[in-house]
Every structure is written in structure tokens, then in C-alpha cells.
Length: 383
Image 1 (cartoon, rainbow, N blue to C red):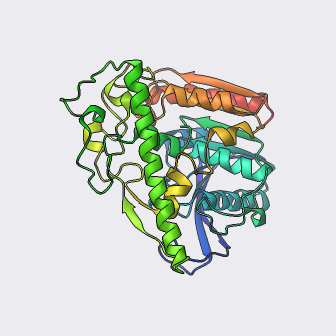
Image 2: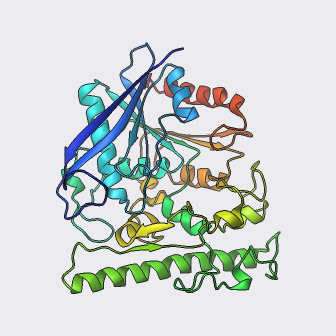
């Protein structure tokens, strides 16, 4: 079946004190979108988005369009660079694309497509669309989402999704770094990549508890420094000033060195960025390059408003949660936590056996996954 691709822009204005993306005028936002449609008409659109990753050519997105669904992929303003990303602004961007889809293309029903990191964005969006809206960012800067056009969705797909960016980073961050100014002086007993560490896999429960607590503690130390730095800038009259910084060691999850942690069909001793010990300090890790405000919005364990499980508890629309059993990034516990947290009385959990995150290794499993989604949509009169 052939499909048509229609790239377009959604442009809107917002009141902001400073720019956090490159190019264009202050206060003017241009959001890229791609509409992928089969020949058949539909009054339902599946709208995917991700805080930073473009996905208009993802296997699942394309396969859904080829299965007769109308699909829109919305890139946020931060496409390809999340160093200054604010989740609150991602919500505004997604809302602008959904409003445009309803007004310009005539879609009556919207299904949020939460793929990977787009899952927590979808939940945060629906929470804001239907509940009490934020008027400030996590850093306390004015940003009034009550003035934004955020049409509520009718259903949500959480496919190969993780709980949230903040929780995922915290579960991956290297707790052996005790001093951010000396990131390569590491605590041997917390360094899972150090052969001298007396704690070796399979890890016992006591070590796992100690390690996880140390990861949260490191996240909170960075958060405390961020808040103090912002307070110092503001006390000096520098309300809109920022500071960029580097976070080393962000790929040190116990899951990567011990397959018995959150067991699944994933390839052991690997991660979605390749060899974990290399990715831990590589240039493309989560939160590697970030800013004060962005840290609080998307990476802070305690402060991010896109907290996944908290948002999910207030989401009551029909929801489909899909776990890929060989996923290297979003492991089974994430799908289960999302499913358990959802406030909807109509929620379904499916498991795609042996499927990896992008269906690259097992492309043959994609058709079955799409069939699950299509059947779910049809049963709820979303087609």
C-alpha cells in the first residue's frame, strides 16, 4: 500500500524571556511535522512526538500508515538537541500540532503515539490538557500553559516506552562519581566497570539497594547545585541568565552488566548505545550536555513535571501499553510500571516477544505489533 508524506510547519508565538533554540526571532516558534496518510480517509489521527528525537521514518510509524492509519509525527522545537530542552515547552509544541490537525485536516479523534521517550511526553501532555495546568517551569520561570491550546486526546499508545526521562537517567547514571568537578575519580565499590569492585554480578539485593540509592543521591546533588546556581544568578539580578554544564557517567545501569536485573530477551552486556562502558562517557549519553533549567525540567528525579507515573495516574483515556521483550533501552519493568500507574479503567498490556526497540533485528515482528494496535483501535471505534 502506498502512502503520501506531507511535511509542513506549525508556527506560533509565545511570550518568553530568552531564546533556548538556535535561529529565528525571540517569541516565534516553528514546529516541524510530517503527515503520513494512506489513500483511505479517516477522522482519526495517531500523533507521535518525542522531546528530542525525530521519528517520521521509524519502522512502527511507517508501518501504521501502511496499515491504513493516518499518522502525524510532530518534532518539538528541540529536535536533535536537548541541551536546553524544557518539557513544558514540548507540551506546547505538541498541542499546537494537534490543534492544527483538528482545525486544518479535520480530524475528530486524536490518539497520542508515545514511542520510547515520547511515552512520558504523551502522558504529560494529556495530564496538562485535562487537569490543572502549569503556569511556571520547573525552574520557576513564568510559562503559562493555561493559555496554550491543548486539545485533549481520545486514547494513548505507550509503545516501547520508558517511565520518564528523569527516572531513566537516574536508573542509568553512574553513582561512582561523587564529585562532579572530578568525574573520573570514581568510587571502586560503586563502579560496575571496575574489575577491582568486590561486588560482581549477579548482584545481591543489598548491593542493588545501595547502588540505586547512590544513583538517586547523585541526581539530587546535581539538582541542589543547579538550584543554588540559579538562585545566585537571580540574586545578582541575572534573571534570564543560564549556565551550561556536562554530566559524565550516564550509562551505568546494573541491567547492562547483570542480565538477571529486570530479566528480558535483550542481548546481555549491551545497551542501545553499544558497549556500556564506552557509552558511559561517550558524547551522546543522556544529559551529557545540559543547562540549569533543562536539568530541572527533564532530568531532575524530584522536580521534572514529566514524571511519567504521576502523570499516568491522572490519565483516564483508553490506553495500550506495549512492551518489546528484547528492548535494550525500555525494559519490561517500565511498561509494567506505566500500566499499573494509568488511571484509565480501559487499559491493555501487550508483549511483543523477541522484538527489539526499533524492530531492526526482527523486522518480521513488526506486522504482528501493528496488528495489535489496529485491533485495539478498531475495538474502541477509533478507526
